[in-house]
Length: 491
Image (cartoon, rainbow, N blue to C red; front, side, top):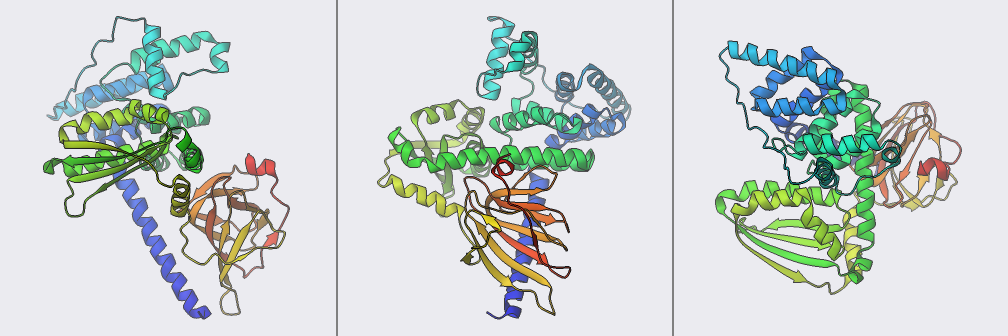
């Protein structure tokens, strides 16, 4: 293919990628969180930073989005545990003023349900410990709780018992409010990282959390939003690493009584779309947050959409039993019970377990352009391949090529006098600029490398990375520098 035709093909591809990315981003931002959830994010964020002017508008918008009075009150009460009594009290007083003003205009907002009394058949410490363990998915221990046992007791008895034990907000909503408040506060990255994980465990999807971060960026500030985005990418990357490890051990899992099952489900015709939405959310949450869930792959018959089939693969009997206890499965089970007309579960046995790993590997390694030739110079650590698509000349100083890094491979530190753009078309990897934290990058990401800024990029430890590099060479060629040490790569 001649250079001109090659360039036109690439332009068309870049146009398609851009349109697809824009569509995905628009869909994610507009549809990931509904109007109620978006209001919860803004109410929590403005409460956390004490911006009462913006909070007043956010509260009114929340009521317009059909949040009830008691739901908003519960959020503002809960936030005292994360933002302090002064912020919570100020927010509650602002809410009183908003309700009075709306009532004077003849608006009668819905009160909503009150919380039921907490159980009295066990101590507050026992109840709070149970709530905390169910919320997080595992008993919570740590050096700080041994150092200050009182904080452990107060957290269990009050935060998780008295507050999270109240039933007028579900845990998914409570985590949404908590994450938004922490993201707006800033300088609490450790807690934010933990609550991102807990939110995913309780049913918040990657798309919803990405939407939350975009709201923080636009409403609170780019600094707070960028930090939250980096923390979220780390959490999602860790979950993906866990998932990759689980996939790589499929053959081993067969020896541990791996469970393979096909669920045959018939849905009442009036409930098909609602059921599919609930199933999709539950399946996505399971795949992200549960290492032992290898596959929950829902399908429906083309000729009869009411006939649903789900391929379920669990790494072990223990993984399956843990899955049944998760909040997202329990939610799926209870909310779809009346939608299901019939259900049949068929246990299966793999004929060729070893081939299963190849199936999942093939799904991860789909390529767009040829892999090219193996790079043999000293500018890379590990194995990498380069396919040059456009070379610069006197008429066009832009160089375009695709690079494939095998797991663990990376470039040396280097810089581009006129900058570079990376389009990530497959896999998961890392990008780091000198003096900044390492970022996780994955398929669909676009990276702008500033001119004359030292940086490196490469694959993650467990998954290959495929990128298209677009480099402007009019100020000179790439300047290669020292190797990226194992310490730099692993930190």
